[in-house]
Amino acid sequence: MYFDRVSVKREAKQTLRTARPSPLLVTLVYLLLTSGLAQVIGSFIVNPFFQAASYIVSGYDPMQVYAYVFGGGAAALGIFVSLILMFYNSIMAFGYAGYTLRLSRGEQGAFGNLIDGFNLAVKVVVLDLLTALFITLWTMLFIIPGIIAVYRYSMAVYCLLDDPEISPMEALRRSKQLMIGQKFNFFVVQLSFFGWSLLAGVLATGAQSLLGGAESMLGYWANFLVSFVFNLWLTPYMNIVFGSFYNNLIGYTRPADTGYRGPELEF
Image (cartoon, rainbow, N blue to C red; front, side, top):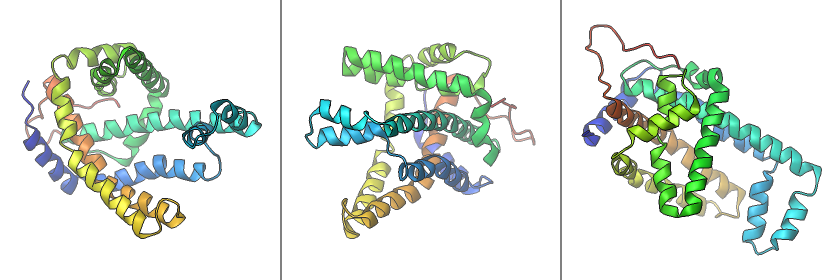
């Protein structure tokens, strides 16, 4: 099925300008409740996995790193908090996907959509875990099957959003069916945002370099803030287009403009 990427991206930009409440404000709240919260918690509780990885990259012996990082009670707390954050972020991402799917269909979104995922918390977490498991297993065979698996299951979240009654396995099965012959097309859609992502990285790195570099706290926060501000626009833009791609796969068409704002989806 043909996907008019140029037209869809133009409509997505128009939605960013006209939707109320502003998608940039909703995204600001979403990022504060996810990335922002993680930054605050990370300043008090160290993620032991990240800490261990940084030591190993620096050349320390992995066995000594394991004993040092995971040997105390602080590691148990760090692991627990990291798992809670991971599940929480999965649920919030599900709600944000539902919000941007509404926008891609010309419907009105709201701040409250961000927490819609808590109504399906168990299914959302299980879906993410199963997706990660299957992608990991395919990647263990070879990198190419792993990449294919990423695209095979990329529509599972939308399938669950549209039909909350199905199981996580059924959402994965439906995604697999929808993506037959469409994986490369979705790759091209994602690739079309590479320039914006590159620009964001260049601006963030430039701000960091001007304010002391990677070793400077000021430079670190400059990088974070520039990336954060840029993502206020890029995140909803990308997700609206991705939602439109899913709409195209299932043959969804917007209803005529007669005052009716579209199907009432339970998500």
